[in-house]
Image 1 (cartoon, rainbow, N blue to C red):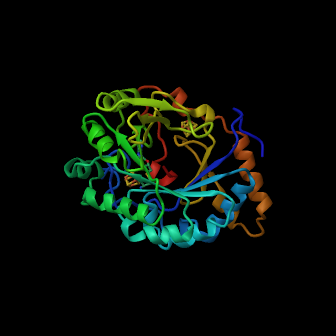
Image 2: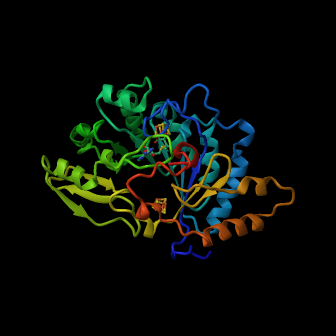
Image 3: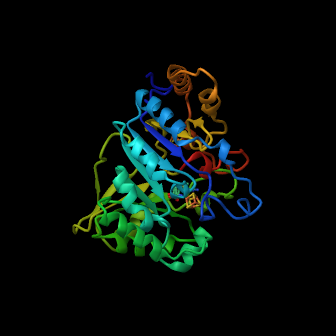
Length: 333
Ligand code: SAM
Ligand code: SF4
Ligand code: SF4
């Protein structure tokens, strides 16, 4: 398939399998917006597993090499392992990003279904800070137990994603680094981004990757290491003493749009060509239309991708909240 307008091929697909979550992270689904009156997508609006699998095959034919299941909280989608088992038949890597709250219970079935790799989000080791960030009543130990269970069933090394927000959890950078040194897992610090329109993002709340690295390097000597592959979003560092590897994802201070090969499929089947897109392309209507052939869907994907010229992070301005953007829990993180 043709690359987009900026010469970027389609290689990755993120599928949001639910717009619901059992956490209310203040930077993603703040309770002030996602409260008890918030209307989530009704069941009939969600893509069924059959529909997701059909679309996934088409995306793979269009060049996708990696599929990530996300959300919302993907482990809340009933029988997610059945979807993974079907997707695992495709010649691509199947990964999943989770908040870890249900991982202890689900690790074995995810592995048995054929999940290739796993990313767990964890922003703090301190319970009070963790609760403040997730705005939910889950202790950190549940997430750590989930990570241990996933490692025990063979999903290690696991990537641990930590979003750093100034004034909230920057003092957790070192405790997190200490905890995951020598664990074999890869801790990655992510710059807080202006996704969606509900988190009230401000530039001065972003802790830059260079500050994160300086903070860790003040205690443990670090050296940069090469990317695993062209276009890897994390910049990799290793502890000089053999403590393992950490990464930083500089979505704000060092945008990586020029190598962005990611498409996103929302819970209700809209195709988005950027995390910060304002509009999606409705694949579900086409999919549900009588006599829609796979070739019609492939044409639609190809047409959207060829027209793609998104590079939001490269163009980002300080104040971005004036623009109405799609929420990450719906489009898929
Ligand atoms: N619920 C799952 C989880 O938390 O891992 C999957 C979906 S979540 C939207 C995917 C990732 O997006 C998480 O690692 C989360 O920390 C990250 N994320 C959400 N909002 C963010 C923001 N404003 N800036 C940076 N990362 C964000
Ligand atoms: Fe839920 Fe993940 Fe968003 Fe937190 S970051 S509210 S766990 S979807
Ligand atoms: Fe890709 Fe959009 Fe993020 Fe740039 S801003 S890296 S184009 S998702």
